[in-house]
Structure formats: structure tokens, C-alpha cells
Image (cartoon, rainbow, N blue to C red; front, top):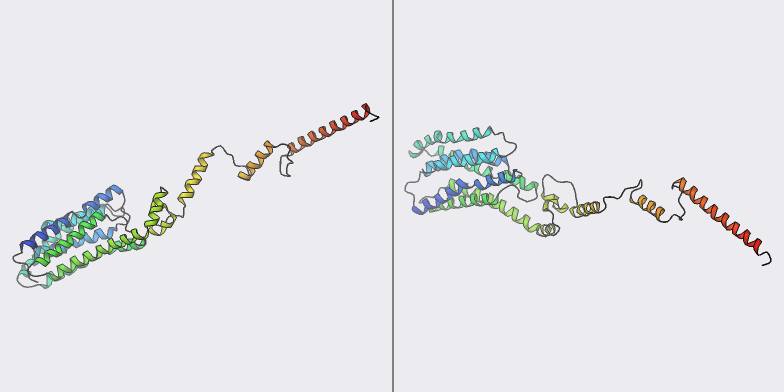
Length: 318
């Protein structure tokens, strides 16, 4: 389609709102990454593709509207920062991503032939922009699949702002005199893919509501529950937090107990020996104790024998 001539006020206002949203969309995600000190679940490939897609997207928007030059630079800078926060990214790559912003003005020379009616170059740029923009939202679905529908690492404030930016930009196209089909496809694809991420996490919350409630009652983290292993990646070892807590309590309550060679059973047998010395000992007990007990029994029997003989000599006629 030909470049937009006079833009209606409604389209201008809606487009400005969409542009503002898309300029600030990644600020909450960058803050979230810094606060969490990790980027688990946020694909670095997503940020890389978005930084690259900002070049053809910015060129297409400048040619069509003519007032999106600042948006292109911001849409490259913010994904570059988020990409550098990823632990597997070399910080030197930030300079490479930032240099992409210099390609935009060079590609803007196509505005000359496009204004003369040669549309195919800008159509190619628009298609590349649409493909890259949609491709950037594909990697999160692989992370979601690893966790059975759970969304981790993606800040939902960022995702909401991005969705609103696409929505208001689409409404700006609707309010224009001529609807830009290629630009509309970009925004619709973005809206659908981001709505799928929202829906996936909502289903996860509904499926795990009882498990999350039980974890709260046990005062443990959801990820520590054995039943939650399928929603965690990488998969942790099987543990029972309630049982582990009980075991740790018992260990703290009885710190002085010594384990015998046979464990607690051996300790109980030793205690029984000390409490009841007259109990006959088993074959595995200490030999010295058995000898003492036998000597004690012999002395008792000899004493009884002497008593009997003395009694017989004192009362012989009885």
C-alpha cells in the first residue's frame, strides 16, 4: 500500500499510545531480571530476535507513518539489555546488537522509490519484520512445554504492556483511512501468541490450586512439593518436605543419643541390661557380665545351702 497521507486524529492518538507502550514494555522485565538475579524461563533467543526485528519494523513504520524513528532505537536498546542479563550471553554482544540501530537510517533510502509507487521493497521489509516479530514469541513456548504449561521467568507486567501496545497499534490501523494489512498481521500475530502465554499460565494455576493451597498449609514452597516436580525444570530429586521436617525435628530433639552397632535397637537392649541386671543375657552380651552374674548366683546358692545345713543342725528333732 502507499504511504499514509493525512492521518486522522484518532489514529494518531491510538498510534501514539501503542508506541509509548512498546517503548517501555521491557523495563519491568529488565527490573525483574535484576531483582531475581536469574533469567530462568526467559529465552535469550527471544530478546535477540526482537532486537533484530526492530530494524525492519522501524523502517516499515517510518516509511508508513514517518514518526517512529525514536521507537526503533528503543526497541533495539531494551532487548539488548535483557539479552545481556542472560548468563549465557557474552556482554560484548551488546555492542553488536546496539550497532543494529545504525542499519535503520541506511534502509530508509527505500522511502524514495516507495513514494514513487515501487512497493515491493517495503513489502519485503514488512514481511521480514512480521516473521521476526512472531518468531521472537516462539521460544517461550518451548520453555512452557518443559514445565507442563507453567510460565516462569517472564514478567506479566511486561507481557501485559506489550499486549496493550500491539492492541492500540492495531486500533490505530483500523482508524486510518486505509487499513495496512501487513502491519495488521504483525499486531494480530503478536496479540494471539501473547494471549496463548497468558492462557497457558492461567490453566496451570487452575490445575494446581489445591496443590498450592496444601503447600501453603505445610509452610513449604510450591516447588518443594513432590507432586510439583512435573512443573519444575530441571527436575529436582524426589523429596517429601513434611517428612524431612519431621526427621530434622527428631534429630534436634535427641542430640545426645548414641547409635549402637545395631542402631536404636542395640541402644534399647543396652538400656534394658543396665536397668534390669537380673535378666538373663543373650549369647552376644559381654562375657565379663555373664561371669559376674554366675558368680553372684553361685554365692547365693552356697549361702542358701549353708543356711539349710545350719537349720538342720539346730533343730535335728523337728
